[in-house]
Image (tube, rainbow, N blue to C red):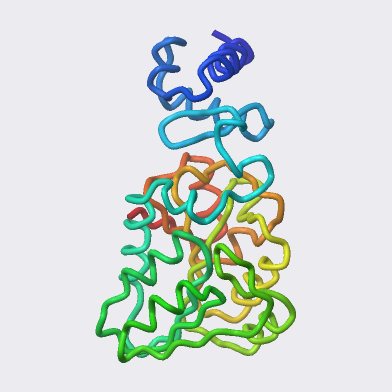
Length: 257
């Protein structure tokens, strides 16, 4: 069956069901699950559907994925095990005495939660949620910038925030992301907050991007960086060959939790 015919049948199945699993599509089309995943990634880039964990859905069935980020509470409930695993893998890279930047978002918050209670060092974040979590570690120093507060995620951004991070030289940084794509690189939803991310990238000795597998092949509205600008990805499952090649050819690594 030609790809165009598969795509037509996939579109019909998604529209009729609202959501459908990769396995069901593979069975209907008599192809491998990997072939279906490649088709879904291509169709998502064309705006024909939205990939979700284990399958695909219409945009209407997935709040917040039509060019806007879903509310924090909804994102927190999505793929919690994957985000917890990513957080633990990231926290294992942190050593005592380091100055560490933890970015914003539900996955970044899991990095903070995975940091050992006895950690001694400095954690810097534009997220008040991350700062509050780290403040429960009695030996950790917590730094936050000034800036304008965005409710929900409790994120600080703006000129004051960028100025603060421009003057900060961190040993290690972890950035959240809205999408990871072999061609587009790392993208996110909030233009003003992307300026903060780029300031963090410019000063950190090492910077890893956090991304659960649902973000593979997804492109959010605003570009953050290319893969040459970061040390690599920390993810819950291995990306497809094209994304691995894009990361590794830029000198980065993919750490699978």
